[in-house]
Length: 489
Image (cartoon, rainbow, N blue to C red):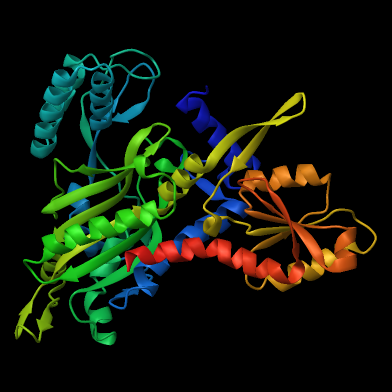
């Protein structure tokens, strides 16, 4: 049986081979931790976005969406705390010249202790790390690395530098005059664009608390160590929603959104056992409660979505730094107040990776005396990049023309692909590999009685159906996803 590491390598290779993800600037030897989405990847990515947008905005009357700019006034990042506090504890190995987050190294050691049944050591180290993080004790973290003999994964040595802070924001200059140019930042998160537009949305949309503002957008972080393919990148995409509530009601809504967001993940059908909640021991400066929804990737359980009760920190800070009131008049209470906020923030790229890892399968197919291996991407059908592949059995006798007619009738509603190259078996395998749930084969009988063969990806079963029945069958099968989206209403 292949190891989890081997499976992950196969997923990464599959993404490149079948047009899901490419290394950015590959012909120039690439750019570290930056990736491009290929022709199938962008379709899957857009389908995940649409799935989230429907769940959060389309099906909730009190949630609306915006699209804020990547460049924002530099005072915003001072107000939010990113200029002064958006740091990670960094440590370098002098032999390998590799850089790591100190807390990641320690957390990996904790996991090793747990795997070996050394629960007391794991608990003690967890407590010590939590204390160091809470007190920003960099020397204490260094001492833990030395005390527990944590070695560099590459060099195997323990020749470490001291731990130091490293700001994660990308800075650049804005202005035509070099001497008068102002330093601005690529946004490290999308949330602040929502907060500074709170009153704009509330007043123009006549929104009443509780209400939410959702956004999908790019964010940028100069990660100390970007790794594990698209799990941790320097340019990534977030799907966030800030839900504004009355002070004192934030914990009720925190629990609500924890449950609703987990339903959204489970509705994709990747497996309930692959998810778990993780409670934050150390809270961010703006939060009074925080939990992560973790997913079991081939490299272990890792954060996919964060649910945070941010209190009224952000709006208060922007009030103070801008000099503008960001308050809501509550007609039921007859008073003004700065709302509290519950945030849901899910990584789009991480969700993409979770879907790919959970869907990649290698199946043994026995055909007489021969055994073949079928590589299939068992994607949730409603997320698949291509929903229907139209395959004329031959390139002659009017079959391509008939196949094109069928494709024209379906492509207005569904993403379709036309393929007439190679034997039909090879074409089935190609579509299995990109996750196409339905293949329609047009043959000579089609010309006689207007029937086609529909092949189902997961079961490989084939069924003869009338052409007129194709759309109804496809629609009915894809409805599963539509119904599941509505779990979050």
